[in-house]
Image (cartoon, rainbow, N blue to C red):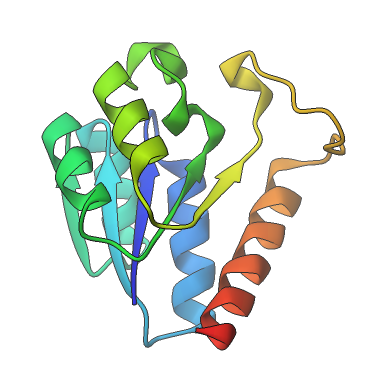
Length: 137
């Protein structure tokens, strides 16, 4: 199974997700795709198996992965201070891979029914969901 972790800015969300997944499941292949080199670097240090940076890398890997995880901004054009292009948002949204999105308010989007809790709790929830999905696969 290939998990594509997409992140931007400093890569902190992707870094934390990768560290937790690698600690709990060494069998999964993780590809880190950063919208910028700083994000990619942080995810490499966290233990990603492969990494690439930029729009084309994200577009390509959305077609070649089994799962996608990242902040909610990866499906929103111009999110993350403009780092997410329309092409990236479309590629992630259109990918047949199941997606887990961290609901952060910095993207100026609120989701009804979502509890307001610390970022690390959202990441813990997503890691549990991904591991449950892997057990079913």
